[in-house]
Amino acid sequence: HAVPVSAKMRLGHLDDSRMLDCARAIADAGATELVVHARTKAHGYRAPAYWDRIAVIRSAVHMPVVANGEVWTVADAQRCLHESGCDALMLGRGLVGSPGLALALRGQAPPHWESLLPLVRLYGRLINPRVAQRHRGGRIKQWLNMLRRRFAGAQAAYDSVRHLNDADAIDRCLQALTQSASPQTLLQAA
Image: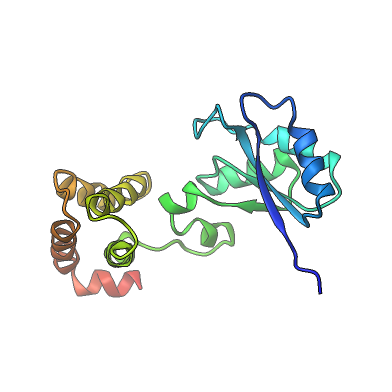
């Protein structure tokens, strides 16, 4: 039985001059779906994303193409789908910074900060066996930093831990913030 294979590519390395060659090679190799990150490697993760270039790739291959890159809001998602001509999105950093973005795209209410704070703590515990001790605190702060775009509470949490490097000390600080939230607020957030 056939196994569906998806592939992901950027528009190119230094420029997008070979993007169609790459997309066609992926299609010819048997991929059943192609995700296109709408920037080159040289662009890194700097805005903007070039969603219109995905439309060019879509017209050159005969497989589903999924748009990716610089989708932070529902409005971004709508513009991306329109410019790329795609029917589907891959969410990356936008979902990390706004964990309710997929819900919002489906017309559902996004989570409140109070429901996310325990998840940040859980994330800290889950990375313990997988990440070197000296990097654990930084990973937690990295997620809090991204959450600051959307949640005022994340700004306060980040401010309270930014000077800490030890993951256990960060967790104790976040636990104190969790406990200071009223039970009423936590129930409303659930």
